[in-house]
Image (cartoon, rainbow, N blue to C red; front, side, top):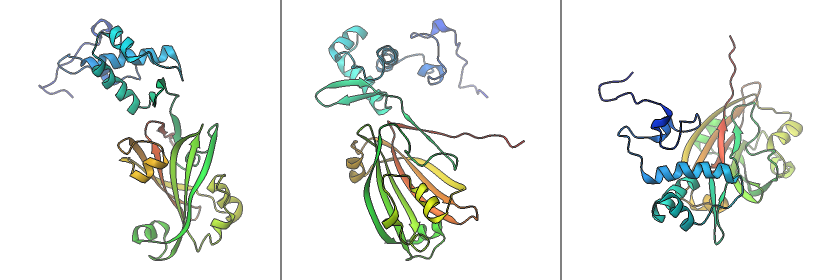
Length: 267
């Protein structure tokens, strides 16, 4: 519903300076209500078209060439490119230039989704931490154990094509999985170990996703800047009897991942 402070703006193609609105673009292609399009945003839309022409992995032309082609200052051009870097559409390589980024990896949510970061081409897993901890009140609640009970903490880094993508911590009851650290193969999915070794399979999950900034340690492990946006997934999984299996804290690089949810009607 529109109130008196809004007006309907025609969506005729000729009213868009950079062509008709595309379904994947922001509403009305990002044009403000006053119709004034910032120069950096106009440059950004032109850069998006250029990225499609160049293709994945291709280098962008030099800034001097692009600024002359677009008729804008290099500072304005850098603002447009900076937004594309944050959005994960281009990458900067120190001393080399700026390149068209590959498509983002898709992470399914829900019990039907795969374990975070699993089965991507060129993926390896690197064990960061494997230890026993005493459960605090929150962790004890999530795992249905008593505060102070021992918990297995496994932290791994997922790397795709030599690029860190995901930092994942799994917490499980050490009483339920007493020798997990000894038998777990860090190169394989944890869920495979739980199924094959302990005959435990998660059938229900509770998940929350929020945006955060990486801590200095996390940024170093993920090879990104502390100010870069990250996607933080909290997951608690339960078995067929409703008993908690694990709590997961997975930190995804916001410029390299997108989440997907699929649902079907039961009617």
